[in-house]
Image (cartoon, rainbow, N blue to C red; front, side, top):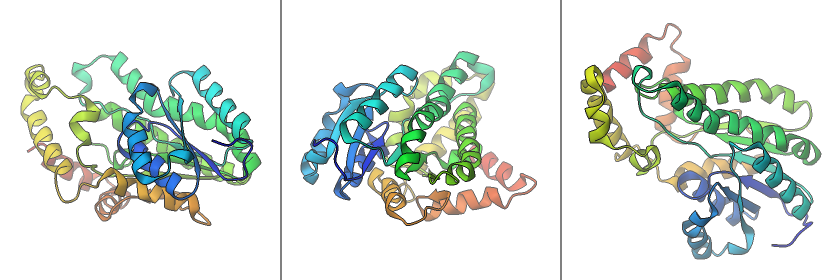
Amino acid sequence: MSTQTAAKTVLITGTSSGIGLAAAVATARAGWHTVATMRDTTRADALNQAAAEAGVSDLIQVKRLDVTDADSVAACVAEVVAEHGHLDAVVNNAGAGFVGTIEQHGMERVRSVMEVNFFGVVELTRAALPHLRASGGRVITVTSVGGVVGQPFNESYCAAKFAVEGFMESLAPVAATAGVQVAVVEPGAVASEFVNNVGLDIPALLAQAGPYAPPLQGYIDHALKSFGSDTAQTPEQAAAPVVDALTAEKMPFRIQTSDWARDFVGMKLADLDGSAVQTEMTNWLG
């Protein structure tokens, strides 16, 4: 890739699969120089193949970035600015799911989920902001409908995503005074990602669930149905609003990726006493 170019440059995290991979290809197709980062660059084959098929390999540069390692974050951001002369947008996409309830998993698991899904987002945003101020750039963070609606057996994950949304909602008006726009993108179910991304061993999980086994089975049945249903989006569909946000004159702060996600988030935002959400989540448990 050429260096010190005037073309816009975006850095995207978590691009080895799913929404991150799709977003990297889509931003490149839209003409952005795309720095596609991942913790393990040996997992770049799927991205490289997708880029080649889309004819955008020359616009995608794979770099290592571990969002839980401050030195890795600082080094990657510094390299991007040195090579391209500027940084115009960051897409915080890297994340990790976790299914379980607090009584049965230790605090170490809670902290590990927060490190990836929350502190990693904060670290990269902090490192990028001086350069985004210089370019009048954008911070887009892929959260989840789980950043608005707390979901059963997703306590740690939803807590981290809630934290991200609170952080970004608070940052947005401050960053705007310096010319930086901030938005969150909230996907719902994305086809095929549930078991793969969360790394579930369902029989083992149920065997260890004790008194929570029946509701956990209900939740898993619901999740598997949702992630395989007509309401589930492809990664490409979920990534499309990211590109729209990058190119819009003014981004909205909160962006849902589907009609289902808008309805689901809308239920929570209109639910002043929490009864609608509690009823819906109880129904998910069967």
